[in-house]
Image (cartoon, rainbow, N blue to C red; front, side):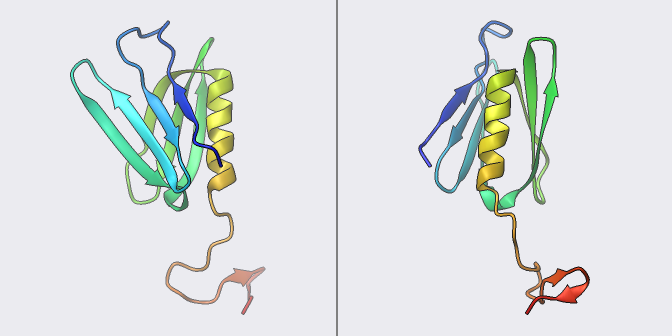
Length: 112
């Protein structure tokens, strides 16, 4: 997967430019503040969901990692928000074994 980068719109908030950076192992969310900011890196395997809240012109992306608080990034175009969600869901492993090492089940029956 090529490394991709998305930036929030400067039209709605000219001071803060949140960024989303994709690489082979996970996603980095750079959330800017007036002074400073935070960088959150999340492995694809630690992401349990992605939600998009659409406004009139812009969208808010909510990434729900496992065992961590959700990450909220705002002011992305609707097209960029859909593309971010698509890229994350393409890279999240969909078939995982049981967390405790037990047999996985399908329809209530063990698959091993």
